[in-house]
Length: 345
Image (cartoon, rainbow, N blue to C red; front, side, top):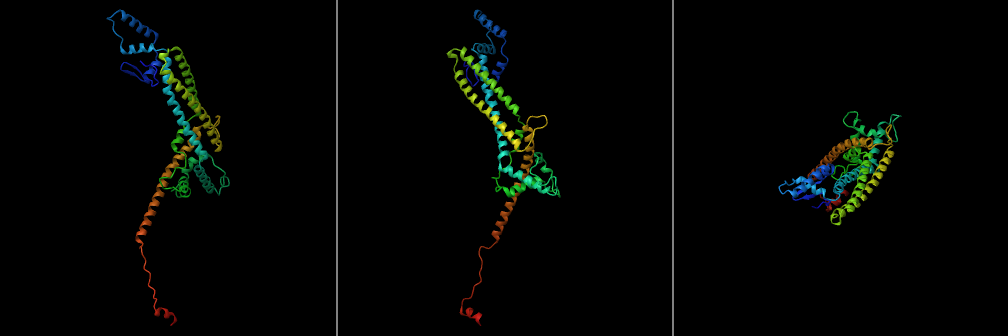
């Protein structure tokens, strides 16, 4: 029975124990009384040939109890399986959050869109001394652009801004290469659901469990004989080295992303709500998510309209080219003596 494989599979005869079973064994450790009964039955069965043999579960439980530091080994195996999943989740979320912060802070396309919002807002409020020619606007305005309608109620300010952006600032408008200028609504939604406190809590737990795994590994190596150490020792020590590096990298990445978000809130002059120490991702990104969602819906429609206009223009050019003759007839000019003397007569 190979109890040390990090693949978390323990075999007994032809049966296999997966991670879920290991988890159950670890969380519901057999009571000492149960093991005592099993051991007594084994001793008595040696003296009594007619004694019933143990069922598979009891045999399996007894063999597990004979493995040195079995509980510590199982803990390390389970931690390895959960660590990969947990750290991957943290990495994925921080990547999304950092990407969104970078785009909103440095993207030229985002600045262009916001510049149009400010310019058209100033134009609409030009006759209003209290609102016209503003140097900026509050972020909650972005979600309300779709509600500002033209006098004939056929177009919103948002649709006009999207159309103007595509026609004047996007050379690929109406083409497959046309790129959405804002962060994706899905990324903004995920960002709005994140909390830095949750990241810190998850990483603290991973750090605590990693330290516990290190201690358990040391105990297993100390209390096991040489022939019982491998492959547990080599695989676990290799994992611990990688896990420590990955965890430290994500702890640094969390600090970097948190600072990037705080800088972003300062950049957009967004302040924390009353009673809160800092702006939360939920408060900040929810506005951007709503704006990006409406912007993308309109962006798709306007791109389709531009594409149809280009196709129509191309078809018209093709039709005119077909109707236009490919040759021209020039009048023949007389070149004889009569033609030369004619003007003089």
